[in-house]
Image 1 (cartoon, rainbow, N blue to C red):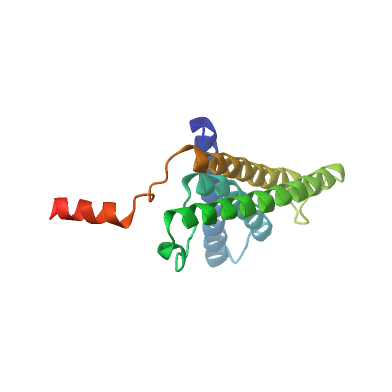
Image 2: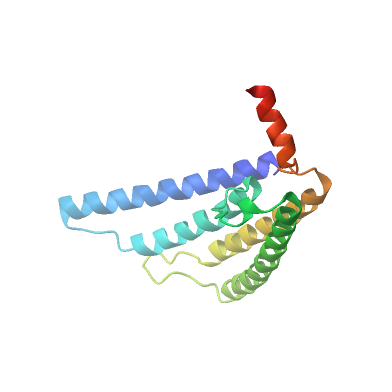
Length: 172
């Protein structure tokens, strides 16, 4: 992933988390000390949470740091592992593309009606919906690139068990 894009996504996510923490801390402190609570905390925290989740998705996708349960795949040969990865990437691309398409529609309709939160701050909702679209789109693009890379680079686990055994004999 491009360093500028990666750094931008990380910065936006970090700032959103920091604001969420500050709002939460301020709400608790004001509530305990003055029995006054921030009326916008739930709405703002929800919007910032969406920003963090959906803008961190491309980072997780690029680093391939998704949670993986490899009960079956650990027992597959390299050929079947490649097929499994291709199916997984194709599925991810299809789902992410559909989600990007749907989120674009939600963003456009939100923009057209100038959707705002119902609290007294009247926070615009459409920028968050746009960032959701950006997150899905970037994750889909990254998945497409990763799919092509599956065919362009040799597989890390393409060595046969005999090769692994030879390596162990040489080490021991």
